[in-house]
Length: 198
Image (cartoon, rainbow, N blue to C red; front, side, top):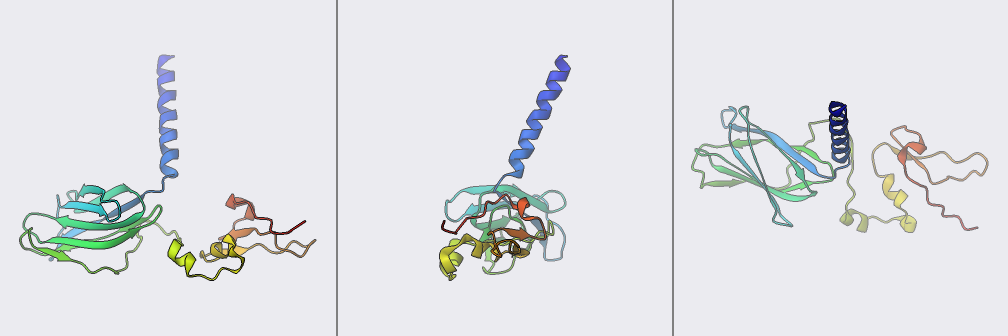
């Protein structure tokens, strides 16, 4: 009986942990570090700095040159990669959004660790971990977009795969519901805003 209670407690703990992970807003940064000949570099140090909060996060490449740093809050980061016998690479301006899973690879040139090479900002990072399609609409975007009536639905329709629901036959008016990637409107867990006056 004691074994049963222990297993039940373990199962509940794992379930809660998985639920919390699924609801996390944090991002993950991963990639491969190689030398100029394309050979992987194990034990390279990965230092990630949140440029707004100055919080540091650290990681290290494994035996196959792969690194993964998770639990990164959304924000703008600077990534530094270093290893003895190689120049240090610094890449600023990495923007991580809610639940981003970004792959960022580095090639370290041979040289002294004290020598640094800064990679220019603005290069495109690609999500190679899954086939999801997403859009982040930030404050600057909203401020520069003319929104008729200041409705949040105008922003929802900017997301790929989102359409408004067909008008109701009885009234001929749209209920304010929307569909994402062909799902039923009830699947969105969003409550339409009634803009009609009674």
